[in-house]
Length: 330
Image (cartoon, rainbow, N blue to C red; front, side):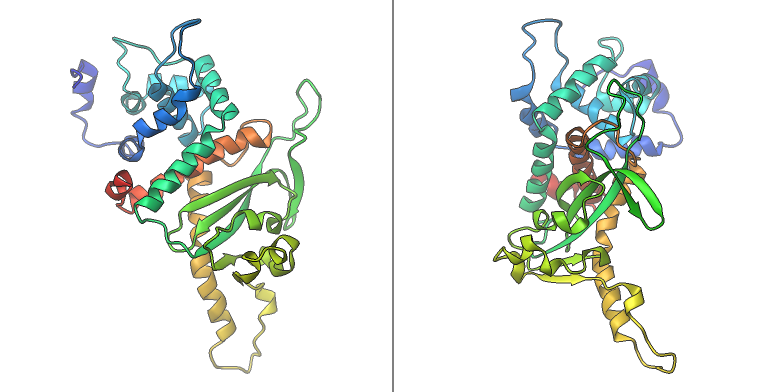
């Protein structure tokens, strides 16, 4: 155990613990650090050439905090110097080592993107949830959310990101990408995510979000008519899936003279009570983690970050449900 410094002794006498510190302590307990380090190790440089490399876990902790608090490379470096909670989470003692600089973090992020480490981390979290019996199979909720992107042309090509696109939702235009998510209907954990340009219709990615053992699929009114889609009709399993899609409110009409129970509305309310679980994951990613706008150019780079974010969202929901011990055993 490391010896306490004067700074540690001073902070130990505080009257309250900040929400940031509580969150980092919660994530420190539930993240399987040893396993995630081993996932990255085969792709990490051995340090035989150039300056000595920093530890994989140190860089991983820094990168995760960058995602959780939506900070730039320079921003997270400065925040670690300023914040005792972040410094404790990083296990850094200024007497022995310094915070990795922004350039080191940049190279580490590129390594994760090139080797699709985000997908491996997301798959590892889902496998652990499944092994722990925390995922119920048989039903999936599908939904999509738009992530805005900057339409700026201040770059070398003098053009907007060619992989992003504009789309109209309601009376407002958006420019960016769309993240499609498949969520376990029983527990609310995200099991599949894909990314497309914003103008791709939600139905186009539905077949990629349904698992092989799913019998029921829930979705909002944007998925009406999905049974007639080619990918669904031409697949033996998908065409036998029961699609419980919410109807548009305007299509449910009740005469003013009718005083009985509107069973159509009751049925739609039951569908919505299941379907709303998908919004919890989006809430954590877009509100708690603050990722409402793309940080990088291109869908692939942003999807690497989304894989880490949705994996972290699953961990947050698992910890809040008091299932940390079961997850760690899984």
